[in-house]
Length: 152
Image 1 (cartoon, one colour):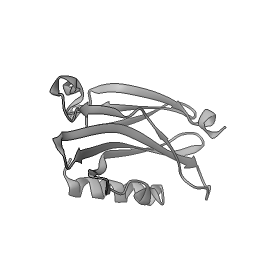
Image 2 (cartoon, helix red, strand yellow):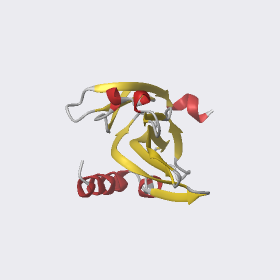
Image 3 (cartoon, rainbow, N blue to C red):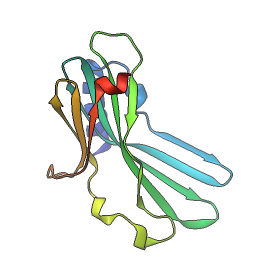
Image 4 (cartoon, rainbow, N blue to C red):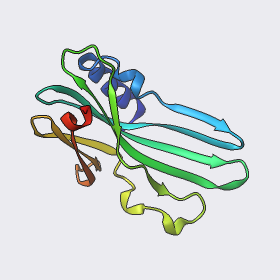
C-alpha cells in the first residue's frame, strides 16, 4: 500500500476512532550503535457489540553500526476502547516475529513476506480475529482476542 493511501486510511479511521492517529505514528531511534525505525503497513477498523477496534500491521527495521544486515520484526497491534467512552485506548500486541534475520538468511521467514496487511473481523459479540494477510486477502498467522477478557 502506498504511503499516501495508508495516511488516508488512517485519517478515515480517525473520524470514527478518535486518537488512533497518535497510536500508529512511525517511530525511530538509536542507542549505543543500534538504530531502528518502524511504522504501520496497514490498518483496519471494526466495531463489536461494546468496543471500537483497530488492528495495525507493524514493521520495524533495526541495524547496527558494526555491520550485519537489517533485521525485520513484524507484528499486529490491536487497539480498542469501549464505545462512547473517553477512556484511554488500550493495546494488545501479537507475538513479534523476526521475518528477516540480521546475520543468517537461513532464518528468514520468507513464507511471511508479502503478508503486509492486517485482516480484522468480529467472530462473536466482543471477540475478534486478526490475521496477517496479503494483497489477495489470503491469511496467515491468525490471532483471536476476547476483548472482555482483556479488560480484566
